[in-house]
Image (cartoon, rainbow, N blue to C red; front, side, top):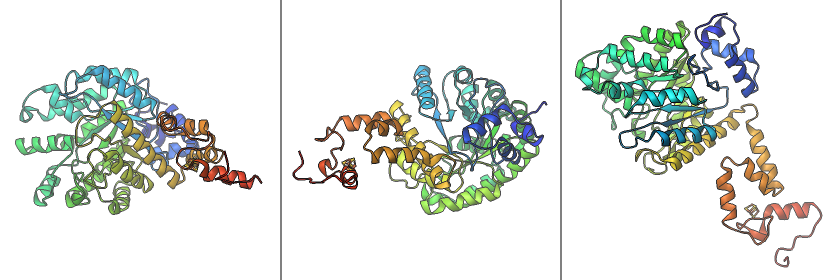
Length: 436
Ligand code: SF4
């Protein structure tokens, strides 16, 4: 049977090959996957023009997925280097790549991605419109914003972030209720500035029906952007953030009426004690649409270590309902990440995602930890390396510090608790000081 989107298929009881792939990967019944897709609680971003895609589902009952932001900028315009980062991100297990290119021939890079990259691809057409038209912001027309959105859909992008929650009403609330860091979303700040300069309504909000028609045609999943995500923990859960979330909830309903798949973007900087409540509010207002969080970064004071502040927040957010974590690298707030920053960011996000999956009881999640625990108990170093989230680093650390006894490590040497417990429980003698 013909269908428009994965959601449209699911609602007509059609099982797509993408649903089958998701069910197999998640160890779930395909009928259950179909039912969640029909309800909007799982999205399978899969543009019909992204033919080399390896599909994944995103939803709170599934394994937590991670996204890696890449792309060119005016200061870093090396397409080959960005492509290398894409390949290594996919090899390290990133399920999605967002191409945030903001300089040069962005379409060539985007098309290369949709031809060669199997990861889910996302973009923010608002940035690209500024590059594409290369003219004063005030001179970009509503139609031109829409044209770029359509162009990305045709190019095969699986999900697009558009900041349509910052309409005139939210913008007024934002101006009436001062915050410390104003708007820190790049796309959000551009569209807010355009609205202020031109006096016009947000083009993606005003033409939302047309946005939905484009999404329906290519099966683009909407990632409803949070222009008002807090940029410091003191702005967390403020009026602007919640006002915008209410609008996103209304837009989610409209998208579902046209069978368009939707995710909601979330914070941002946020104190640890507000995260659970934020996940629950989003889940209620947006009726279970998957939550895609950018962090949350739980303290503002750690530039150089924001992969850690974000992993702490991400683990909590995913435990309480976020489905998709945007990685944060040590370069956050400082510069465009290099290859090593990308690696550190991916590993940190994967740790957060997996920790949450264990806490949520996602099928098969704890098996990984079980394998490592057994290897540790048996002092089976090779299996420990193979099982490690970063085998290369684990091997390097061990190699750099040779223990006096092969089976232990230099932390405790002959006092190795694991070795001594194994011996004593096997009926062997333990004599730490005498032993050669
Ligand atoms: S020496 Fe200490 S840290 Fe190293 S494996 Fe044994 S118990 Fe673990």
